[in-house]
Length: 233
Image 1 (tube, rainbow, N blue to C red):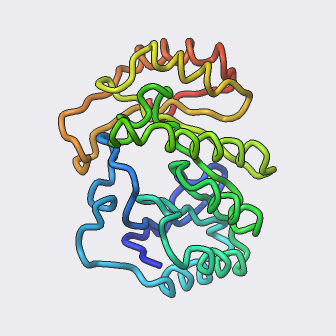
Image 2: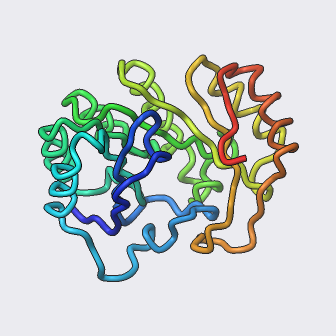
């Protein structure tokens, strides 16, 4: 399994856990606002050995209680299941960040008990989904079928999960947020995230909304998902 980065401790990436975070390269999406462009494009030769990550988790057991696995898209990685099994054998909880495009793989690792928390991106309303993922319009129907299946997998999984949307001025309007709320109506955790240009995004020049504007969007969104919150504001 390819690992391109390791953060040895974080209080932010895994809710309720002191965790380490690993970053895997490659993604099947090209979201213009992606803040890890170099990971998505799999640039550079530097990598982190699995053994280094496992040694860190073992050494800091008792301080670290979880591992966050992000990317890129981690479910593209061959060997992910075997690696997660080793992490679980150390007694660590695992959080996975996922874009929703691999419902079969997602269901498989959940059924094997290899993941405890999933954060799944919901990129936009259905009508704008493919474009927001940086994909051609004709990809939309098949893409949305996979997204719907992944949503259903999480809702029936019995594990902790959240949905989240990074809100970008050039990609999301109030009408889009309302349409997304109507589609995703439910009582689970959902976060509208403020967009911040990391300096490593796929399409430079995008911008975020103000905190006041995001609060107005949240008010609309909460008509459908009353537990929704803002993140990064």
